[in-house]
Image 1 (cartoon, rainbow, N blue to C red):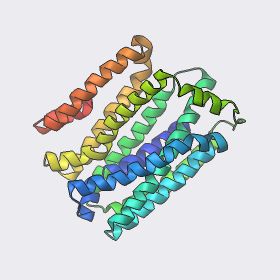
Image 2 (image 1 turned 90 degrees about the vertical axis):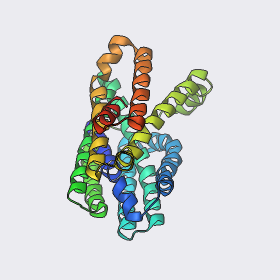
Image 3 (image 1 turned 30 degrees about the vertical axis):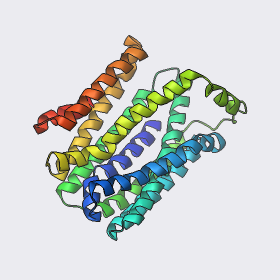
Image 4 (image 1 turned 180 degrees about the horizontal axis):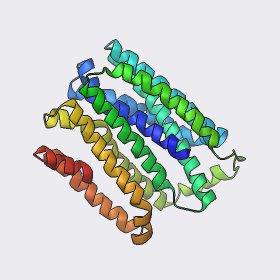
Length: 295
């Protein structure tokens, strides 16, 4: 059931972001305006992330997943209302809510996934993240189909949000029983932040999150505006990117066990850099798609 929660998170994310070109057109935004609108999502994420760990620690992963899902789904509803009214400020408020809810949902499901991994004594996190990617592929394909058949973004979001909420509410019932909070955890957390390697790991995570986030936010739009494709192709391009991530995540555990974390980290960083460069400078379209796979 943990994998289902991951998949639902990915599905909601890709449903929204595969339709960014349509959102841009509905609100008649310039590239700068689109960037500012997407900044609202980042604002919600950055506001919630520092607090989400404490929320999960206090109420447990299952309630935190539900709280995050409710907030994210409410955000999708506000985005839908903003697009229906062609109101950019309302859409931005919805993205703030979605970013806050989705990030809390994300942290809580990862905490539960780590607990399941410890309980079973096996490497499972790459598979859980593959569940996210599978959900995202499905969402991107749904976005591509909606773009192909010229379905407005608003009704699509209004259908997807409640479906994700119902699915998450059912899935969390199978989470591990809540345990007593570890009172020594805050002290250990503060001690960890005094270690230089913690800061270096944080820098690496931030860098890779930025690289992935750029693709999530801009790849579909880059294909439509930068390479002159239809919105359907833009959504499919995002799906290809997520599909490549899925393959990497499904095989990630075995690759890490065989070659070690540091060599794999270096190799994947090089591949990501090559992919970004190919998407930005590549032509024709098949080469750009290869870049998305490497990215």
